[in-house]
Picture 1 (tube, rainbow, N blue to C red):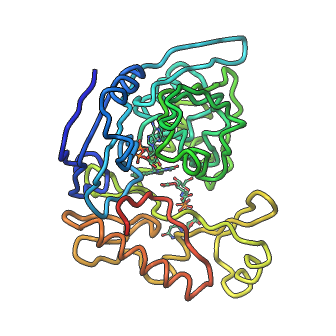
Picture 2: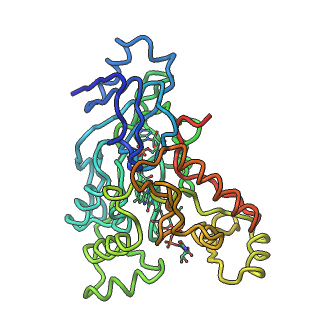
Length: 341
Ligand code: FAD
Ligand code: EPU
């Protein structure tokens, strides 16, 4: 099935709930639809392109003057199975948390700590979603999609996806060029649980034992207690990434600010808690008009109702400047800003 629209409202297609529109919008449910659409609509090569999932990691600061492509492809199928593992091919349009629920129901492990992350499966492979000690890159086998430049279908094995903390090839060289249509995941029939994040283990044990169902339930409870529900208060999760800095700078910061949470990162570097840095600058719970900083999680910017994308963006820039001034640390956005001039 395909749907095409012009001057399409995006308010229900971004979890910030920002009022914005797209000049052209194309949604499809089968990979073949995309090739047909592109062959018959000759003006698209001259338009800016935005590939859209659920819009839970986007901020529109302007109307989008191009073509939005939404690969709303359904379906979960077993492509291979052996004694220890199962391989699932999952359509880009499947809601991420539906896949987690399905896996936990079938007692397949590997993604349970990623419960309740909003968004679609396609974007999960773009973003390398992570939470509670788990990153999806470790369960991805391959990523299938359609390259708009070469106009061919292609499969990237996980080793070629350049995965890193909230990063991948799809966010860089292939951004808005490679339309992910499905992702193949490898799940474990005898999973090793990852419970070393904060007090996750203690909380899971309180539910009566460590198993996939209890891990999922605990993660959901923790998330619901800290993060705003986008259906109630517009937001896109963490607005910034946790900064990864040279360990020498982290040590210097630790001397001046002994309570700053720090974690080992790759390449001998150190990750800092951006939420802590922002809170120390006095932003937690701040509100100007309808743009604000969540009162329980300073890393999450919120739209209390009718904030514009520009108001939220401007607030984020002020926050960035104040963290730079106080700590000498540069925050990098996790949220994709669309239409920034
Ligand atoms: P979108 O926001 O629509 O798109 C995100 C990016 O991916 C864009 O650059 C887009 O162009 C690209 N894209 C989307 N689909 C495709 C596709 N099929 N092919 C190619 N490119 C595509 N993230 C975490 O990692 N961990 C968390 O714990 C977490 N918690 C969150 C909590 C809340 C309350 C919210 C609102 C967000 C949270 N996020 C978290 C961020 C967000 O849920 C993830 O980034 C998610 O993967 C985005 O999915 P989406 O479908 O909404 O993508
Ligand atoms: N902290 C503060 N003040 C705050 C927020 C956090 O001091 O306002 C401190 C906490 O006390 C804790 C540390 O910062 O010591 C880390 O906080 P938390 O466990 O809440 O996690 P986070 O680093 O703020 C990251 C991810 C989340 C993910 C959680 C759980 C990033 C940018 N964010 O948040 O992902 O759900 O860990 O794993 O890596 C997202 O990407 O959108 C997202 C929500």
